[in-house]
Image (cartoon, rainbow, N blue to C red):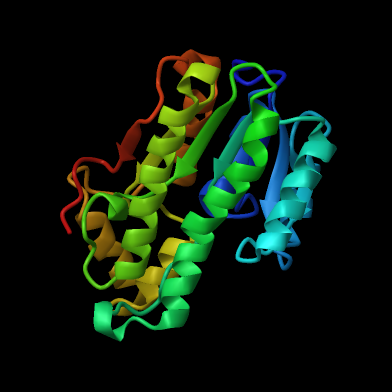
Length: 257
């Protein structure tokens, strides 16, 4: 690797699996010291931390639907890393059975908004004062093409991701003159446990569902997590110093939903 993030301190939520785990790995390989954000039921994060190159990596477990836990997690990250330069919000969930608006449960709506949008806001609110003390701080939010188009039967996820993407634009605008950048990656279908869980609820089950999802992309396949992680490393790095408030679709061509 090129040492793109040498000397940087990064916090990655959802860092124990999927896109988040890939980001953690690439960031560490690029020289960053990483706080791996995980739920309280994610022993994989501890194993991931031990396997990373470099030293000083930590695991911060928290229920990101709990605002008191969010505040503690932010404090633990700053204390454990000795500051913070990069914040990546990658934690996420999705439904296994699609539902139109009037059939979407309050529980589903609340979970989607809490984890994808509220957690991003309250973590940002807590972390920004510390990040502003550092050199060239950057935030990367993992959105979705579902925040750009209306994916049928997934209203809560769509709206949460759309809100997340506009939150990033607002942060970018508010703090540009103070040197804090905020950008969004909007992936298409990525081969993660989340995607496979979603595909399992599609007609024909997981295998057929994955084929259907792959066919939505003009490029003819879905992506691997490292393809998103490499873009996240660039946006978090000083090489992207004039990029802020941007939503970057990584979707193999406009997704046909």
